[in-house]
Structures are given as C-alpha cells and as structure tokens.
Length: 224
Image (cartoon, rainbow, N blue to C red; front, side, top):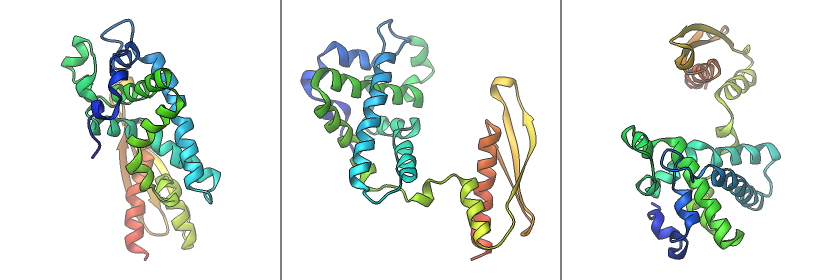
C-alpha cells in the first residue's frame, strides 16, 4: 500500500503555490488545476512510455501501446489517487463537496496529473520521474499479459476462429432513457454454439463488449 500523498511529495514542494493549485478544482477557485492537468498528462505519458520501453525490450509496438493506455487511463489514475488518499487534500467548491467530488474518478485523476506537473515545474523532470515511478511501482511490476489487454470482442473472435467456429454477431436490442443518460442493451449471438448473451451499458459499444465478455466466459467453459 502506498503511503499518503504528504509522505511521497517533498515537504518543500507542498508549500508552493503550484502544489496548492494542483489540488484546486475549478469549482473552488479561478486559479484551478486544469492547465496543469494538461501538462501532467503529457509528462506522465513520456515517463510511462520510457519505463515500458526499457522494461519490455521484446514487446511489440501494439502491446506497448495497450500497456501504456491501461496505465495512464482515468480509472488507473483514480485508483492510485485513492491509494494515496488524494481526495483528503483536494480544494473543492461547496457543490462538489456536497456531491462527493473528492471521490469522483475524473476529479481524482485530473488532480494526480496536475501534481505530476507541479513536481516537474518546481523540481524538474528527474523528480517528476521519481514521483511517477514511485506511485506506479506495483503496477509496473505486475503488467497484464498481451491477451488480457485485448478487448472482449477481439478475444472472443480469436477464440472462436482458433476452434473453427463462425464469428459472433451483435445486435442492439433496446435503448432506454433520455438522450444524455441512455442505457443500451446489446446481444452477442454465436450461431454454431447456440450461445446468446446480453450486455447493458451507457453506449452501444460498451454494451457489445459486455455481451462479448459474457460469451467469452461461456465459450471458454464449453469448448476446452
């Protein structure tokens, strides 16, 4: 388990205006962390790209790209932010405080990228790299396999083709809700096996991916 944010970041940096701004959401002040988040996102990408390039000398470009995407996405950043209790240090407006903004993934991930930018701006690239590699130590030690990073539809199709079965077919079954809060229900049908699965999500693509995941799990059990 990572120590809390204040234990990872140098005490001298914590006293700077840049660090305070990195922790400030736009709901709390006009001097917020959005521009810093933009910078931190780029710095994070470079550091993680270099780390993967050096750590995985035999990996293909496609695998490296998927690994990087899995490490720098909103969900991973938010998980790291929660591990270091970043939400406890955020400066939020009253509305965001009431609605639980200190737990919202988008706010947490943006703030973490802004902190990376503050380290870079005040202490340079070497310290920014040290900070990033510290918070990513566990994840860089346990990288997912190439197959695990493939989306469910690709994994399902490859499995079926390797066993001589026809490719799955997807169909949108239902769309419910208002335009900005719709739920989509999609079906995955594998004719040769008579398998039908359904997935429900906030977009058709995600619903199809969920249906494909359920189908993959079923196919894996049925055709060992």
